[in-house]
Structures are given as structure tokens and as C-alpha cells.
Image (cartoon, rainbow, N blue to C red; front, side, top):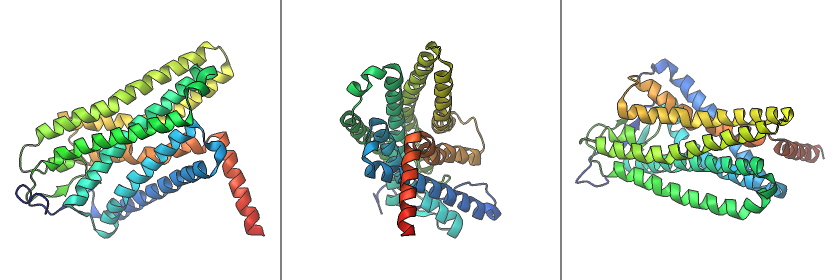
Length: 317
């Protein structure tokens, strides 16, 4: 037992969707299983390609590779347990495991925001300052920035998790969510957790709202820059690219900021809707981002085509 003088809870039970009828458990578990597999293989393909193909060792792909690793870790640390909960009825996590999961949820969630922001910076320089791009953005610089983001996001994860660790827990241990995060765990405390949740809200808003604001600003400049060139073809291509990028960015940030605000002012009474929005901004970007940011690019498609062709030839002989 952790901190026996403060907490008597030995484990937490993930409830997932509290109001979901049992007849839909199999459907939900299969949906999570499919989401996990799509995310796993899509991100794994991206990571393997970037590691093995030297011509893909470029700043933009280094950024995408970091995002893919982050999403792989997040999904592997969260989805198997909620799948087991709905598939086998095994939704229990030990006290320690719950807080370890909480750390990685807030750690990797924050990391994604900063990596996507770095991606926006890369696109801004590539489009708005193309002649200076290679002198400004290098693989070494991008690798250093990504390392700093991994360390900084870890500090954010530790700070948020510590807000939950200081709370005592006795009796109630049913977490109304698909994984352990600060708010659904903190509300189970035997003392008023409003202060901890409020502090977590401030940290989360700073961690996500600042990158989101910068991303919005950079894409506005990118579109304005391309539009001012007066080239219809370039304008259409940039608009299409920005639209697809915004699909992922919107899925990640808008439901997230909505849920964070809801948890403070309680505008949405439906707990199941709250859990659905959490799953939407958490898992949907993980399997759409490698497809939109990487696998749909011409360079990656050509590389995949060569790999599959090589595999086919080897199998033939």
C-alpha cells in the first residue's frame, strides 16, 4: 500500500463509459481493439521507414517520427487495459500502476502538443522562408528541440501526477474514465480536491493552449503567404494540405480544451459524453496523424511502393 497513513485504496477500477449497457461491451471492446491496431501499425510503419530509409532523414520526418513514438507509447500504455475491461471484465489497476499511467497520460499528451507546434514551425519556415529553410532547420536542431520537449513534457507529467499523489483515497475507487488521469481520479479523494484539479487545469491550459495559439497563428500566416502569391495551383494545394492537417489538429485540441473547461464549470451533465470526448481527442489523432502527416505524402508512398515491390520479389524467389 502506498502511503498507508493517507490512503487505504490498493487498486482503482476503470469504469469506462458509466452509463453503457452491458450488451454493448463487446462492440466497444472491438472498436478500441481496431483503433489500437490501426494506430499501432500505422505509427510502427512510420517509425520503421524513418529508421531504415536514409533519404527520409529530414527535419520534417524527424518531427513526425517523434510524434509516432509518443503515440505508440500512449496507446500501448492505455488501450490494452480498457480493452481488457470491456472484453474480459478486467478493469483493475493497482494504486501504483494507476499513477504511473496518469504520469504517462499527461506526459505524452503534453508532448504531442509541443511536437505538433514544432511541425507548424517547420511548415511556416518551409513555406514562408524557403530559401533559408535548410540553413535554419537542420536534423541536429530538430533532434535537440525534440529532446528538450521530451524532458519538459516529463516535468509537466510529474507536476500533474504529484497533485493526485498528495490526495488521500479511502473506499471509493471506481474511475469514470478509460484510463487514469488527474480529474477522474482526484474526485474520488476523501478530501476536497478542487484545489488540485484547478491547479491541474491551469497547467493543462498553459501546456496546450499556448502551442495551439501558435499553431493557429502560423497556419494563418502560411495561408496568407500562399494566397498573396496569386498562384491558383499553389493556393489550392496549400489549402488542401492545411485542411487535412487541421483535421488532426482540431480533433486533438478542440475536444480537449472543451473537456478541460467542462471539468471546471460543469456545463455538460452527461458523464458518458465527457468520456467520449476524452477518447475522441486522445485516440483519434493517434491513428489519423501518421496517415495525414506522413503516409499520404508522395515521398512516403514511393518508399512504401519500393518496399512492397522488394518484398514481393523476395517472396517470388
